[in-house]
Image (cartoon, rainbow, N blue to C red; front, side):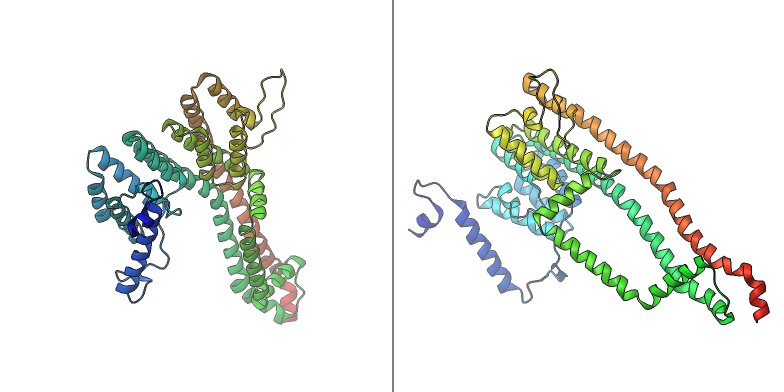
Length: 405
C-alpha cells in the first residue's frame, strides 16, 4: 500500500518525482552520517563547487565518442567517471550513472544542475532519449558547445582586453604618483621655489592618493554595491542589457553574438525535430543578453496565438513599402525566416546565415582588437608623458633654485 500511494498515481502510472525526493533525502542522510564535516570530501575542499563550460564540452565530447562506438551508456559513464578530474563533475556523472539503474533519465538528472548543463544541452539530451537520434544530436551538440566556448572567449576578450590595458595603465600611474612623485618634489619643497601649475596638479593628486586613499576606496566599494543591486533587480538588469546593445563600438558585438547564439541553438533544435514553440522557448534561454531573452519570449507568445515568426519579428510583406522597426534582429534575418516559412527550408538557410554572421563577428572582433592597441598606447603615452613633463618643468628653473640655496 505504501508503494502504491507513494510512487503511482490513480491511473497506475509510475511517478518518479516522489522517488527523486526520497533519493535526494537518502543521499543527504548518507552524506551527513558518513562525514563529520559536510564541506570536506575526499580530503578536498568542495565548498565552492563548480564546473566550467570546458568540463561540460569534454563530458559531451567523450560521451559522443563512446556511444557512437557502440559502447553501452552505463559502461561509457563508468569510463567517464574514471577520466574526470573535476570532483564536482565526477559527482554529477556518478549520480547520472546511479540514477539510470533506477529508471531516471539522464536529462532529469541534468535538470538538477542548471549551472552545469544549460537548457540547450538538457533539451537535446531529452530529445535523444525520446527519439533515439543519438549520433546526430551528440555530434551536433559537441560541435555547438565547442563553437560557443570559442565564441564566448573571443567576445569576452574583445570586451575585457581594453579594460585590462587601462587597468595596467592606471596601476602604473598610481605607482608613479605614490612612490616617485613625492621623492622628486621633496627637494623643491625644501628650496621653497614655486612649482609650475601642471606640477602642482600632479603633486596634489599624489598627496590625495597617499593621504586620502580611503576616500577612493570607499567610492570603489559604493560602485561595487551599486552594481550588485543592479544585478539583483530585473528592471535594472533589463536596462543594463539595453545599454550594452547601444554602446557605440561594443554594441555591435553584443547584438551579433546574441543573434549567432540564437540561430545555432534554434537550428539545432529544429534539426532534432523539437516543436517550434519549444525551440523558441529553449533558444531564449541560451542567449546571454536579457533583452534578447525578452524579445524571443515575445516572439514565441505571438507565434503561439497564430502569427508567423517573420511577422512577430516585425516584417510585413503584405504592403509594397513597409517599415522594419526591430532593432535586435536585422531585416535580412527576418527575410530568411520568411523564406523558410514559405519553402520549409529553414535548416539550410539558417545554417548559411549563421556561417556569415559568425565570420563577420570574428572579423569585427579581430579588427577591433587591432585598432584598440594603438589607441591605448596613445593614452598610455599621454598619461605617462603628462607626469614626466610635470616632473621636468621645475628643472628648467634650476638656476633660480640654485641661487636660493
